[in-house]
View 1 (cartoon, rainbow, N blue to C red):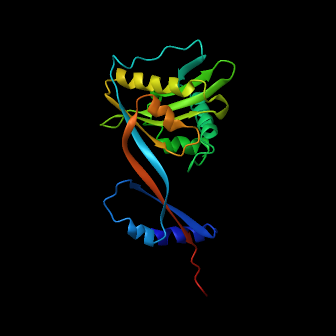
View 2 (view 1 turned 120 degrees about the vertical axis):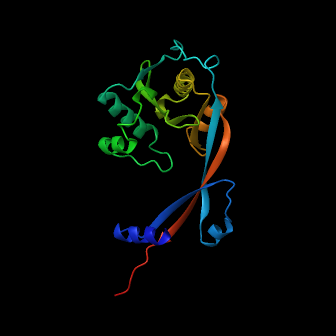
View 3 (view 1 turned 180 degrees about the vertical axis):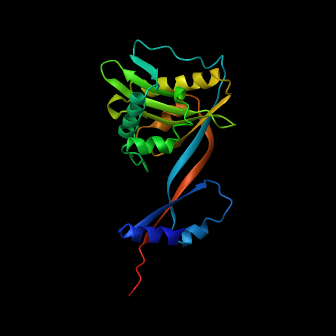
Length: 219
């Protein structure tokens, strides 16, 4: 893997390759081998879960105090808006790489995406300000893929409303568990939001990183 990464870096004309490896925070392998090769832990991602029930997780009603309203992603214009909102909301997030709309859509597997599990949040006086994308194709639980709120609109109840709506939507479909992954160093305090809404740690993943200089071949 390291050799291939270094070759690709050379092909791309850059001086080094940065390689990431994801391991459970309690791995079965001997991580001293990674230490000896120059790898270091740089990030931790928590996978959180929460039990659901139809009785305990009704769909939230629009809140007149916050002014937050939701709409389903039904049209191509809505999908383009989701793409724009995610790019803006995650611009400063670790390992987020913006992609053109068509490339992003293809990467999602748009023909397999359940767009009824994608909601755009609007805020009175501000317009579209947040988005949540979920999926229901896992056998063990419903899964929240992305929850993003524009920086200017954070702290105004949008993330909470989207999260409770996803809980209610999955509960209505008969799911008894919902999960998501979160970067524990996320600057938007997403981890605190999820914990406040009853999500708990399922397991954690460490991001290991090594930087490899490009090896040149003498001629």
